[in-house]
Length: 109
Length: 114
Image (cartoon, rainbow over all chains, first blue to last red; front, side):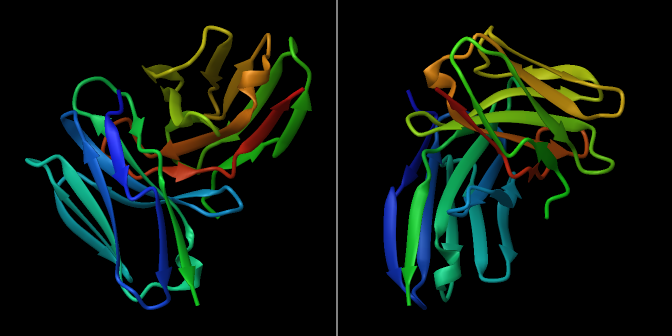
Protein backbone atom coordinates (compact mmCIF):
# COMPACT_ATOMS: atom_id res chain seq x y z
CA UNK A 1 0.00 0.00 0.00
CA UNK A 2 1.47 3.36 -1.03
CA UNK A 3 0.38 6.25 1.12
CA UNK A 4 1.88 8.67 -1.44
CA UNK A 5 1.50 8.43 -5.18
CA UNK A 6 3.34 10.65 -7.64
CA UNK A 7 2.77 11.21 -11.32
CA UNK A 8 4.25 11.09 -13.78
CA UNK A 9 7.15 8.75 -12.96
CA UNK A 10 9.25 10.16 -15.78
CA UNK A 11 8.96 13.44 -17.60
CA UNK A 12 10.93 14.89 -20.49
CA UNK A 13 10.40 18.53 -21.43
CA UNK A 14 11.87 21.08 -23.77
CA UNK A 15 13.60 24.04 -22.23
CA UNK A 16 11.08 26.78 -21.49
CA UNK A 17 8.10 24.49 -21.01
CA UNK A 18 5.74 24.71 -18.03
CA UNK A 19 5.97 21.54 -15.94
CA UNK A 20 3.56 20.04 -13.42
CA UNK A 21 4.29 17.15 -11.08
CA UNK A 22 1.44 15.72 -9.03
CA UNK A 23 1.31 14.11 -5.61
CA UNK A 24 -1.70 12.38 -4.07
CA UNK A 25 -1.78 10.97 -0.58
CA UNK A 26 -4.19 8.85 1.39
CA UNK A 27 -3.62 9.92 5.00
CA UNK A 28 -4.42 13.05 6.96
CA UNK A 29 -1.28 15.13 7.11
CA UNK A 30 0.33 17.85 9.14
CA UNK A 31 2.82 18.76 6.41
CA UNK A 32 3.86 17.92 2.87
CA UNK A 33 7.42 18.34 1.58
CA UNK A 34 8.70 18.65 -1.95
CA UNK A 35 12.30 17.48 -2.29
CA UNK A 36 14.73 17.71 -5.18
CA UNK A 37 17.45 15.14 -5.71
CA UNK A 38 20.12 15.85 -8.31
CA UNK A 39 22.07 13.13 -10.15
CA UNK A 40 24.92 13.51 -7.65
CA UNK A 41 22.51 12.23 -4.99
CA UNK A 42 22.13 15.22 -2.68
CA UNK A 43 18.63 16.13 -1.49
CA UNK A 44 17.34 19.67 -1.15
CA UNK A 45 14.06 20.59 0.47
CA UNK A 46 12.18 22.88 -1.93
CA UNK A 47 8.96 23.49 -0.04
CA UNK A 48 7.15 22.55 3.13
CA UNK A 49 3.39 23.05 2.87
CA UNK A 50 0.53 22.65 5.27
CA UNK A 51 -1.97 24.70 3.26
CA UNK A 52 -2.33 26.98 0.27
CA UNK A 53 0.45 27.87 -2.09
CA UNK A 54 4.14 28.79 -1.95
CA UNK A 55 6.38 30.30 -4.60
CA UNK A 56 10.15 30.44 -4.84
CA UNK A 57 11.60 31.79 -8.05
CA UNK A 58 10.29 29.67 -10.93
CA UNK A 59 8.89 27.02 -8.59
CA UNK A 60 5.33 27.01 -7.27
CA UNK A 61 3.83 24.44 -4.92
CA UNK A 62 0.17 24.10 -4.11
CA UNK A 63 -1.77 21.85 -1.81
CA UNK A 64 -5.46 21.01 -1.50
CA UNK A 65 -5.98 19.43 1.89
CA UNK A 66 -9.58 18.38 1.21
CA UNK A 67 -8.62 16.56 -1.99
CA UNK A 68 -5.36 15.23 -0.50
CA UNK A 69 -3.40 16.49 -3.48
CA UNK A 70 -0.40 18.67 -4.12
CA UNK A 71 1.25 19.93 -7.28
CA UNK A 72 4.72 21.23 -8.01
CA UNK A 73 4.95 23.58 -10.98
CA UNK A 74 8.11 24.73 -12.73
CA UNK A 75 7.74 27.72 -15.02
CA UNK A 76 10.20 28.37 -17.88
CA UNK A 77 11.97 25.07 -17.27
CA UNK A 78 15.74 24.91 -17.69
CA UNK A 79 18.17 21.99 -18.09
CA UNK A 80 19.46 22.64 -14.57
CA UNK A 81 15.98 21.68 -13.30
CA UNK A 82 16.73 18.09 -14.39
CA UNK A 83 16.48 16.05 -11.21
CA UNK A 84 14.23 13.67 -9.32
CA UNK A 85 11.41 15.40 -7.46
CA UNK A 86 10.07 13.60 -4.41
CA UNK A 87 6.90 14.26 -2.46
CA UNK A 88 6.88 13.36 1.24
CA UNK A 89 4.14 13.67 3.84
CA UNK A 90 4.05 13.69 7.61
CA UNK A 91 0.77 12.21 8.89
CA UNK A 92 -1.18 14.17 11.45
CA UNK A 93 -1.10 11.16 13.78
CA UNK A 94 2.23 9.68 14.74
CA UNK A 95 5.55 10.99 13.49
CA UNK A 96 6.18 8.93 10.39
CA UNK A 97 7.25 10.07 6.97
CA UNK A 98 5.83 8.61 3.79
CA UNK A 99 7.62 9.19 0.49
CA UNK A 100 6.52 9.06 -3.10
CA UNK A 101 8.67 7.13 -5.54
CA UNK A 102 9.77 10.31 -7.24
CA UNK A 103 9.38 11.94 -10.63
CA UNK A 104 12.46 11.94 -12.83
CA UNK A 105 12.53 15.16 -14.85
CA UNK A 106 14.79 15.75 -17.83
CA UNK A 107 14.77 19.16 -19.47
CA UNK A 108 16.30 19.19 -22.94
CA UNK A 109 17.97 22.36 -24.25
CA UNK B 1 25.71 23.73 1.49
CA UNK B 2 22.91 22.67 3.86
CA UNK B 3 25.05 22.88 6.99
CA UNK B 4 24.43 19.20 7.76
CA UNK B 5 27.58 17.09 7.73
CA UNK B 6 27.63 13.36 7.19
CA UNK B 7 30.63 11.09 7.41
CA UNK B 8 31.91 9.01 5.81
CA UNK B 9 30.76 9.72 2.25
CA UNK B 10 31.41 6.16 1.16
CA UNK B 11 31.70 2.94 3.09
CA UNK B 12 32.46 -0.51 1.74
CA UNK B 13 32.20 -3.46 4.07
CA UNK B 14 31.38 -7.15 4.17
CA UNK B 15 28.29 -9.06 5.24
CA UNK B 16 28.07 -9.64 8.96
CA UNK B 17 30.07 -6.53 9.82
CA UNK B 18 29.02 -3.49 11.85
CA UNK B 19 29.37 0.14 10.79
CA UNK B 20 28.67 3.54 12.28
CA UNK B 21 27.43 6.51 10.28
CA UNK B 22 27.79 9.98 11.72
CA UNK B 23 25.72 13.12 11.30
CA UNK B 24 26.28 16.64 12.58
CA UNK B 25 23.15 18.79 12.29
CA UNK B 26 23.02 22.46 11.34
CA UNK B 27 24.02 24.77 14.13
CA UNK B 28 20.99 25.32 16.36
CA UNK B 29 18.93 22.42 15.01
CA UNK B 30 17.72 20.05 17.71
CA UNK B 31 16.09 17.36 15.56
CA UNK B 32 17.98 14.78 13.53
CA UNK B 33 16.33 12.36 11.13
CA UNK B 34 17.77 9.28 9.45
CA UNK B 35 16.58 7.97 6.08
CA UNK B 36 17.54 5.04 3.87
CA UNK B 37 17.36 5.22 0.09
CA UNK B 38 17.66 1.99 -1.85
CA UNK B 39 17.03 1.30 -5.51
CA UNK B 40 14.12 -1.04 -4.87
CA UNK B 41 12.42 0.70 -1.94
CA UNK B 42 13.10 4.38 -2.55
CA UNK B 43 13.37 6.72 0.41
CA UNK B 44 12.32 5.37 3.79
CA UNK B 45 12.22 7.10 7.14
CA UNK B 46 14.20 5.30 9.83
CA UNK B 47 14.19 7.33 13.02
CA UNK B 48 14.07 10.84 14.50
CA UNK B 49 15.83 12.21 17.56
CA UNK B 50 15.02 15.47 19.26
CA UNK B 51 17.45 16.95 21.77
CA UNK B 52 18.87 13.58 22.67
CA UNK B 53 15.58 11.69 22.91
CA UNK B 54 14.00 9.34 20.39
CA UNK B 55 11.00 11.16 18.93
CA UNK B 56 9.70 8.95 16.13
CA UNK B 57 10.44 5.57 14.68
CA UNK B 58 9.88 4.44 11.14
CA UNK B 59 10.96 1.34 9.26
CA UNK B 60 14.12 0.76 11.24
CA UNK B 61 15.33 -2.81 11.55
CA UNK B 62 16.22 -4.26 14.93
CA UNK B 63 19.81 -4.67 13.66
CA UNK B 64 19.98 -0.89 13.35
CA UNK B 65 20.18 1.56 16.22
CA UNK B 66 20.77 5.25 16.59
CA UNK B 67 21.49 7.81 19.25
CA UNK B 68 21.88 11.55 19.59
CA UNK B 69 24.62 12.85 21.82
CA UNK B 70 24.65 15.92 24.12
CA UNK B 71 26.44 17.94 21.43
CA UNK B 72 23.47 17.00 19.15
CA UNK B 73 25.44 14.95 16.67
CA UNK B 74 23.90 11.61 15.88
CA UNK B 75 25.18 8.18 14.97
CA UNK B 76 23.41 5.39 13.13
CA UNK B 77 24.76 1.94 13.92
CA UNK B 78 24.14 -0.87 11.47
CA UNK B 79 25.08 -4.38 12.56
CA UNK B 80 25.04 -7.90 11.13
CA UNK B 81 25.05 -6.28 7.73
CA UNK B 82 23.34 -7.96 4.82
CA UNK B 83 23.66 -7.37 1.09
CA UNK B 84 20.23 -5.71 1.14
CA UNK B 85 21.47 -3.03 3.51
CA UNK B 86 23.46 -1.50 0.67
CA UNK B 87 21.90 1.92 0.22
CA UNK B 88 22.36 5.64 0.52
CA UNK B 89 21.79 6.78 4.08
CA UNK B 90 20.79 10.40 4.61
CA UNK B 91 20.44 12.40 7.71
CA UNK B 92 18.49 15.63 7.94
CA UNK B 93 18.00 18.18 10.64
CA UNK B 94 15.37 20.72 11.62
CA UNK B 95 15.07 23.37 14.25
CA UNK B 96 12.56 21.83 16.62
CA UNK B 97 10.38 18.82 17.00
CA UNK B 98 7.13 19.84 15.36
CA UNK B 99 6.08 18.14 12.17
CA UNK B 100 5.84 21.14 9.89
CA UNK B 101 9.43 22.32 9.78
CA UNK B 102 11.74 22.55 6.81
CA UNK B 103 14.33 19.80 6.60
CA UNK B 104 18.00 20.26 5.74
CA UNK B 105 19.70 17.19 4.32
CA UNK B 106 23.26 16.00 4.48
CA UNK B 107 24.96 14.71 1.35
CA UNK B 108 24.52 11.10 2.41
CA UNK B 109 26.67 8.06 3.12
CA UNK B 110 26.81 5.46 0.36
CA UNK B 111 27.05 2.05 2.02
CA UNK B 112 28.07 -0.94 -0.04
CA UNK B 113 27.88 -4.36 1.59
CA UNK B 114 29.80 -7.00 -0.34
